Amino acid sequence: MTKEMITKRIEGLDPSLLMEEEMEEQVKDYIGLGFYVVKRTIPVDLRIFLVSIGLGEDLRQEIYLLSLEAERKNLYLKEASNYIQRGLYHFLRAYGFRRARGYSGYINDYFEGGDRND
Image (cartoon, rainbow, N blue to C red; front, side, top):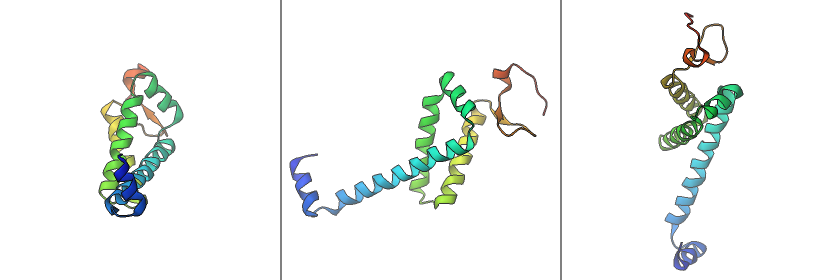
C-alpha cells in the first residue's frame, strides 16, 4: 500500500478502501464459521486421519472455498452453516468416506480394510 493510499484511507477520501476492508472482515467471519462447522461436524480422529494421509491441506482449502461461496451468496448464519456442512459431506464422499447406519461418524472401507454392507 502506497503512502498516498494510506493518507486517503486516513482522511476517509476513498470509501472503496474501507469497503474492501469490511468485506475482508466479513469473509474472515465466514471462514471462522467454516472452521467451527468442521470442529462440530467432523470427529477429531477423522481430522487427524485426513491430515496423516495428506488431505489436511485439501480440507483447509475446501473450508476456505465453501466459506467464500457462502459469503458471496450473502447467506445468513444458519444457511451458511448448512451450506458448509453439505460441502464438507460431499468432500468426504469424494474421498470414499460415508456415514453408516447406526454409526455417528464416518467410515471408509478402503482404509479400514473391511467390506461392510450397511
